[in-house]
Image 1 (spheres, protein in one colour):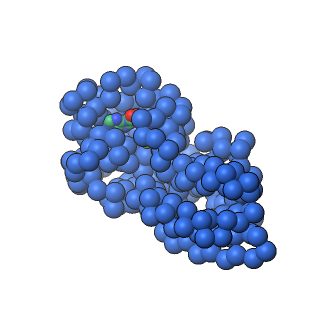
Image 2 (cartoon, rainbow over the protein chains, first blue to last red):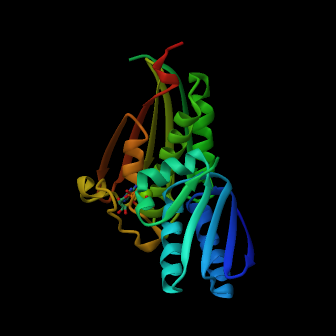
Length: 104
Length: 145
Ligand SMILES: Nc1ncnc2c1ncn2[C@@H]1O[C@H](COP(=O)(O)OP(=O)(O)OP(=O)(O)O)[C@@H](O)[C@H]1O
Ligand SMILES: [Mg+2]
C-alpha cells in the first residue's frame, strides 16, 4: 500500500496504490493524517486509480478522513475507484456522505 | 454431497496473513472459472472473516486460524474460517449492519459484506471457545463443468 501526495492551491491530492486491508490501514491512516496536518487543505481528493483491493478497513479509513476534513472545514472526494473497491463502498452506503466516482 | 477438491491452511493471527488467506482462496476457486466480480466478492468476504479473527477473536494475542476451502457440487465454493478466540456473546446482534465493538478503526460492515457478497453465511460461536464462519458461493455463473 502506497500513498503519494501533491498539493496545489489549497487542494491536496492523495493517490493510493496497492491493497488497503486491516494490515495496511493503520500505517495508511498515520501517513494520511500527517499529510492533512501538514497542509490543512481546503479540499482533499483521494485518487484510488491504483488501489487494487479494499475491504471494510478502507471504509473506516475514508470515514475518518471525511471527519477530519469536516473539522478542517474542508471538503473531500474520492475518484477513480476500481470495480472491487466500488462494490465495497456501494455496500457500505457511505456514498450518502462522501462524493465518490468510479474509474472510467 | 461430493467434495471435488479441498485445501486447509493454518496460520497465526498476524495481519500480514490477511492477504495470504484471501489470495489462497482466490487461487483455489480459479478452476471454477469465476467472473472477476465473483472473484473480488470472494476475496473481500474472506478478508473480512480473517480480519475479524485477528482483530476481535485474539485481541492483544496471537492465536491460531484455520481456513478450509472446499469445492462442492454445482460449482459451489465453501470457505470456512475458524478461530479459538474469545467468541461472540450475541451472534444475531454482531451480524447487524454497523454493529461494532472495534471503535473508529472499524466500520461494523464485515458481516454485512460477507453476507451480501456470498450466497450463504453461517456463523457459529461459543463465548470463550471460538467462532467459525462458513461462506458458500456459486461460481462461474453456476454453469457447471
Ligand atoms: N471471530 C470473532 N471473534 C470474536 N468476535 C467477533 C468475531 N467476528 C466478529 N466479532 C464481533 O462482531 C462484531 C461485528 O463484526 P463485523 O465484522 O461486522 O464488524 P467489525 O469487525 O467491528 O468492523 P469492520 O468489519 O467493518 O472492520 C465485531 O465488532 C466483534 O465484536
Ligand atoms: Mg470485521
